[in-house]
Length: 176
Figure 1: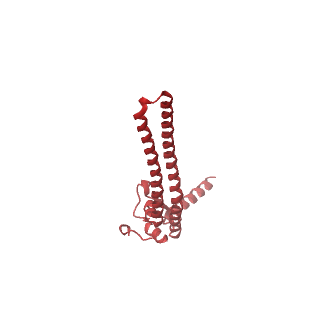
Figure 2: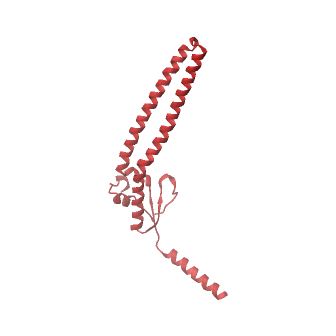
Figure 3: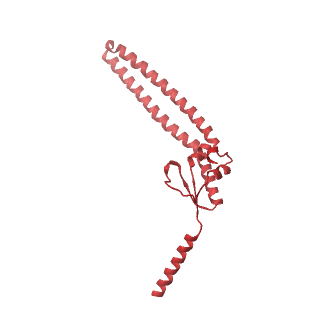
């Protein structure tokens, strides 16, 4: 029994020593910097800005319509009969609700559109990062974007230039 425990302990010690004696490679990358370097992101951003501007223009038109009707109501409210006054107030209330609903819907639509436009770009970047990791034998590649990684040593490799090469995009001058 003791001999079995001793053998198991020695095998465990040998296994742990073997794992730690390997030269493990770690990498890090700022994924946000990769996305910003990709030309596809610029074109997606332009599409989003155009669509946002269109939605913003419609919202402004609705707001102008509401303001005109509200101003007209304020000017005439004293001379309106109670029935007409109530009808105008309900109309203003409905118009205000339409404006708010449009604003909420437009915001959700823009977020969905942004996700749809950026997903293929993010997938391409992620794929390139994975390929670089596999090709270069990295055990882990950590993302430094968003402050997720608080420390990395000199033994960790910044794979940004390798990923840029994989994506066929130029490496920005400050990171070479």
